[in-house]
Length: 448
Image 1 (tube, rainbow, N blue to C red):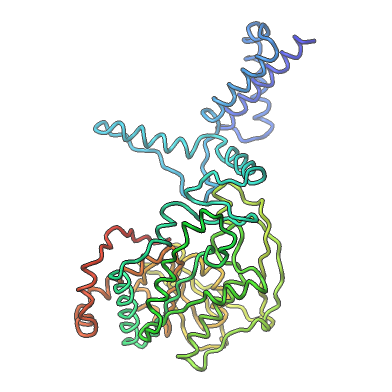
Image 2 (cartoon, rainbow, N blue to C red):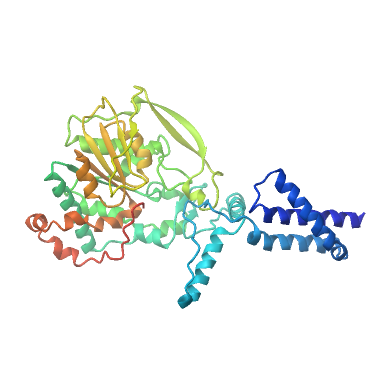
């Protein structure tokens, strides 16, 4: 009986091993099963006289060990990331720097070894349900009550390192310059820097994260710009905090606000614009049927290799009027990127064209802004692309930016910076302050 059991275990090990190998060439189907069974039978015949001599416990241990160390090597390589990022590419080999190839291959293997995603899911589920600890503390951390937060040295520094007085002055000048530069072209420029989740839900942070995020660059900038009537600065902190009394405004397992938070941001933006455009109208909550939708997921959960595991409420806003903007094909242009998006609405409540310089926070925001303007051009980048704005000829430019990208306010669009006649005539002190601040370390990225 014991001998027969060993034979069965040995055959199963051989079958699983060959199934892993053959899955690189044959999809999971009937032919894969037949081929694996045939090769397993051959392997079983060749090994049975040796393996049957092992005690059953050692046979089980040896088989599991061999599958664990060989499976990731011979199995089908991973091509997709559960962590919402690009996987490392295979490194180029150069005889002049052979060690660079080996280090690059190590990174490549760590991203592509077989069953990597399965290991990530298992590790993520274990940590989520039993330990409440992050496998990637350099990217995300657990707060209280299953609230997840972005973390890591870079994130903490980007949001919580104080600006110098020279940096604050340069940011103020940059915003004044852009406001004036657009105004001379009959375009109204507004800047909205939106707070990270930790500023709206500080009580959900751990004690360590509370200490790390105690200082806020965004609050520092708010205080510095307070009362500066040369800048159209939109501050939505109060609305997002007060809104919590009715519904959550941010997503527990994500870095973003939810649709209700986005609506509150939209309403604040429209109310600010209304001061300059008295005929501008916006939708009130009473204009929508709001459905509560229980869902799961979130970009912070993805860092654990998971797409579900933490439930939260999101909200679906349906206009009672039935009016909905339509996505249209954007005009081709060399400065457009894969996330360029344009919407149009016939019989719009406002006969204005809006241009939004934005990041991922506008994914929910555009659900509201698109239905409020005749045409909206959404340009995903941290710094305004002047050529796109000039081609679009909008009435209003909304520059939306999340707090963690606030460093980009130190950089002026090159087309404006190089307009020396304009700057020398209106802001002669700009070059004095810009020379004091080193912005060379800020990497300008197309899709933050």
